[in-house]
Length: 252
Image 1 (cartoon, rainbow, N blue to C red):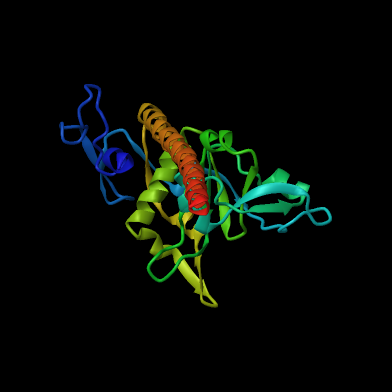
Image 2 (cartoon, rainbow, N blue to C red):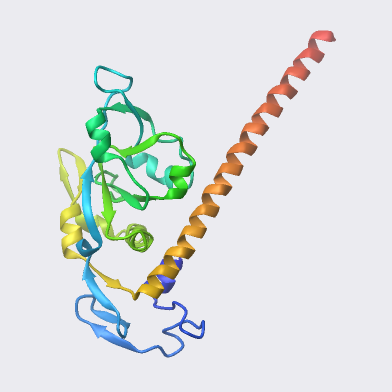
């Protein structure tokens, strides 16, 4: 919602803290996007924001031979849970040390699903793996071979780019970049990155959005952690209550 308000509707705060566009902010027509954007803003192909793209790994279910490095492996199905703070949803796998060195997910990298989906759900689900995620999980993180990891040009760019991916996914735009082989839908990531354009906000707006996004994400992860603790406490209390009731029955 914050991304759409700032970078689709262009109602980011102006120098007086007022919504830019509705307060009379200067707008100019941009041919690539076929819409008006704030004066002085740039437009770049999506690939401009991506420094590198790495494949995933699936490894082994248990330590086998040289497959000794324990990791959490994010699949497309894990992305909705992982992004909301359920960090234990991704399965534990064991991979080669050389693959861990080249494929480990670092802070401010984006894992994006490139294969999967359904007739009513597109591929392209994504999660921004932040420092907040990595501080709350002891295992190293990789993605599966049905996903890819995107390294962005800067840590400040990552929340902005990630929010753009989420926005396009939510409006079902990513269906336009799917192809199918043997019944499995694949996301044309290369075509997507090299055909689509995105506004390039000035540094101040980009940094402020990044800061606000990170606060929201941290609160989300903290709240999820509290919910997890309360659920554990609830299960403990219920088990003790059940034991007490059973003992009463035995006594009677």
